[in-house]
Image 1: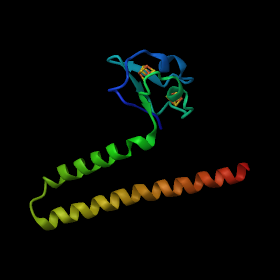
Image 2 (image 1 turned 45 degrees about the vertical axis):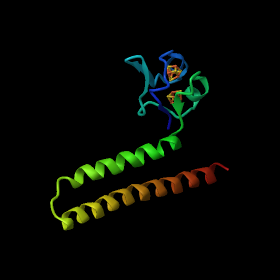
Image 3 (image 1 turned 180 degrees about the vertical axis):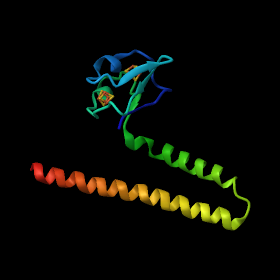
Length: 117
Ligand code: SF4
Ligand code: SF4
């Protein structure tokens, strides 16, 4: 999924014009992608002159950092070591569930690819 690195976006609006489904708009002179509308065609990556539209995989370290920060913040709500440990175990279950959903989805997509061959 594409995402906009706002520190690089200069607000030229080229991606807004080229998006085939009008999924990009300008907010405070920076491009913003509506992921509900985006059909993952990749055109915005190709046309941006500032390489401000980045690939999903480049967001992995940022998302990991966000998840860890969120978890640390939640820990502040618990006093005892046991409660904190129980929270961390719940968070592991939460992210394991997300991992399984992703794995099953990929499995399903691979089956679609097989059928189309
Ligand atoms: S084309 Fe690139 S620099 Fe121009 S508005 Fe879109 S993201 Fe920003
Ligand atoms: S990937 Fe395609 S549909 Fe999605 S925002 Fe970029 S140009 Fe629009």
